[in-house]
Length: 512
Image 1 (cartoon, rainbow, N blue to C red):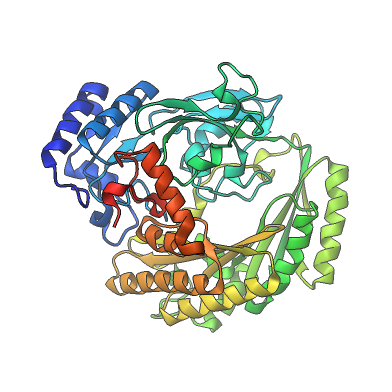
Image 2: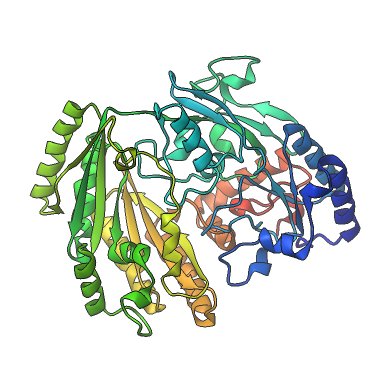
């Protein structure tokens, strides 16, 4: 049962009622079902295992399920597709909560090619949307995360990112439909006016803006989302760059940040460490079968074998060919002045093989990295945000790399460089069958939270194991933001049924 919740008969009554709402075939309570909704990358999957799941297909079913949960006091954990791997998958923060599975809500409700947006239900995957756009001739392009088998809406609500011009996925949200905890149905922005055609084209509607309130929160269940998409460009140009040494990251940040700020580059280009590249090629044993940290001599051999640098990046330009050709000259000159090694520009034009376009083409390639140590692989992402200051980024790199080495984990880092902010992505790869790595990984993650907080930075997204710890680092004025979140939670969800503990936001009934 959920922590602090001992009414087993209430849970049984909830599942009985759920069967009458959605049918026997969409209520899942068997042990194999509970395991299926657990974190597939956890060392201990039972730590966050739900008591079961209910799959809804309509808004009306969601409303009835929420009303029943409120009546019985049963906590729910809504998921779009449950593919948030590296952050907990479908598993709830609170073990014993009931997963509210929205993956069957798979309708693409609208694609507006003239105004550049789509409207999707939460179960629509990146592959679903890509196929729909392809069937229309790719007049609109979407942005995709590195691992793309998840939900378009769910990824945006979790502030997922992609290496495309519209890569800040939460920033592309425009207009939501949401079921609140009491079953009330609301539409945000211009959608609050019945039949308003501006719902998905403007964020500047009347009154407070609520779209972002439902990102990384537990204030409601999103049932449809408007999302802006990029008009297909006439051409793209791509440049690969390398930095030969670890400490060169400072030059790398210094190269990209001003180009991004000035709009010469229109996406957040990322510097990825060589172990990140190697982990996509194959497991560590492919390069070295020793114990402990990967020796630097082996790292040098890997870089030579794969013809990569210590840090590696790719810049993509999108638009009319004459425009991006002019931008390419500026980027090349800046790379030369910064002594950053760069290859030749590669150009794609409308009509060429679409796979070479650097459009948002969904892929699961990035998941190969979890096999780095062999066994049943897994990964955690630790991703603090900081100003795009080269010196600060270099300090963060050295601080994190030192901790990786201290706890015996191979360092895999990346820096996504924006014009004003840089995200320091630290991927922690591990073998779930290794008890020693279990100890090391948790100790490393907790240390990274503490170190980064002391340096003045915080994560923008984290695993369910660490949501409370990360929330606690946002401590201005004795955690005033946390108190504001709690006040809103208790107002919108007085029964405390929606995703208790998500992002460290607990309802009064479970608050300690």
